[in-house]
Length: 276
Image 1: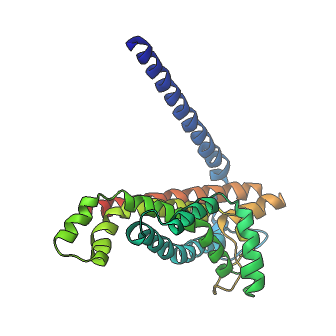
Image 2: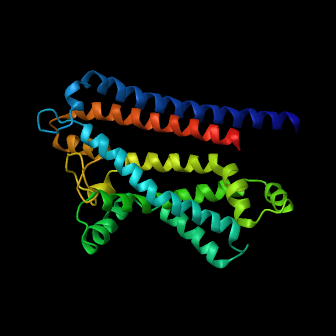
Image 3: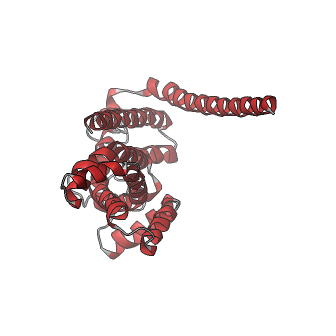
C-alpha cells in the first residue's frame, strides 16, 4: 500500500510539474514573440502627442488608457469594497438575498465583454445620450470589473481571523471602528490583488470600449469626448493591416504598462500588509 501511494504521489507531482512547465514555456514564448516583433519598431514618432496617419502615435492611446483605468477604478472600487464589507460583516448568515447577490456576481463574471459593450451602447451611449465618450466607457468597464472586486474583497475579508474582531470588541471598539481600523487593513493585500486583476482586465479590454468609448485617436480633454485605449489602438492598426509593425510596438508598450502596474501594486500591497 505504501509503495502504491508513493507511486501515485510521484505521478501527480510529475503531472503538476509538467503542467507548470508547459504554462511557463507558453508564457515565455508569448512574451518573447511580442518583444522580438515589437522592440525593433519602437521609434520616437510613436510617442508623439499628436496622432496622424504617418506616425500612428500611441501616446494619445496611452494617456487615454491611464485616464480610463482611473475613472473605472474610481467608480467600481468603492462600490465593490463597501458591498463586500456589507455582505461579510453586516449581512446575516444564511440570508437568501446575500446568496442571490453572490450567485449574481459569479454569473456576471462569466458574461462576454461584447455583451457589456452592447449594454453600454444601448444604455449609456444611446439612452442616456452620452454618445461615444470616456464616461460611457468607464461606466461600462466599472460594471465589468465590479463582480471581480466584490468577490475578491469578500474572500479577503473572510480570511481575516475572527479573533481580530473579538479582540477589538473586547477592548470596547464598535462595529464600524472594528471594520475600518482592524479588519479592512488586514484584508487590504487581498483586496489590492483583486484590484490588480481588475486593472489587467481594463487595460486589455477592447470589445466593450469600441461600442462605448469609440476609436478617436486623440488626447481627451473632457470625459464626454471619445478616445481609444492601447488595446483598441492595436485592434485598429491590425484591422487596417497597414501598420502591423507599429501594432507590435504598441503591444510591447502595453506589456510594459501591465508589468509596471502589477509591480507597483504588489509593492503597495506588501507595504500595507507589513504595516497591518
